[in-house]
Image (cartoon, rainbow, N blue to C red):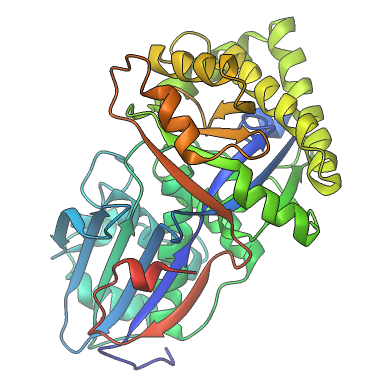
Length: 410
């Protein structure tokens, strides 16, 4: 324990991610048994890095965990939940994704297990005072810890929120307690560990695509357990980066995606090893490779075709429920109006944000105008996104900050 800063927050903020090709090939056990490749970009949404965590040491013994949901436009807090842990027993529901502050609890457990070299039984010390336990384990006796996660994105966004938030929580916690920055590869591995602890069985693409800046393709080899993810930057010319900023939009469909339900469908279909399922996984990996080339060369017509192809592959993977009725209407409307080159729901599908690659000189108002001519059941909204060249960052910030939009700007 080398860091004794109190009152200052260790503040980590990160972009969201858009998966452009290859998703599902990163998901265990598919990624173990087949190998995976995913291409995507880290993006700021409406000019903010929408995901963050902050941690600080307190001058009295306690452990406070808080989650915040903020409005994407104003940055104002919509809802907040706070848990004050008394004993180690209060951590033990970390494996229930529905528990209060489950992500924060699972992240703390991950750090404790790594600190103990995996030789740790929380049940054996469940009645121990949490501050005393953390002080003994982390070497910060006499101090309390306050840990907060914050999201500007709606729940079920499909933009990798929980995995990227986990990365932010790990960064801010380690920075606050030890004054150190976790390296990129270690951070990716830790987030995958957290998701396994939470029993959400996520893949590796969310943290890779969101925590690592810019455009990239990431690959994992077959029969590698745990997966060793190799990330390769896709170097883009300035004109290509600016084109991405102008031509990609995110549309909130008004429907939260339920990734866990879709995940169960995918894993059942994978276990059956139907020929179509195996062919689709092959096509997903190949699509990621083709997408990386199209991005690098600035071939946006090809990229649009691949994006639409990717959406068809996602629907084949997940089966019924991947495409809500309003999403189909939105895509068909934009295609018929000849406004887009391609489109796909972000993440697993089933709802969340729709990513669209528009044609030259098409703007946000054009999308709004054609949607105004049709009947949609959902409360949708249209958002700009920009390629994030900074990825996740972590720094000290004075405790007087409000942590609104200003602090979340790139």
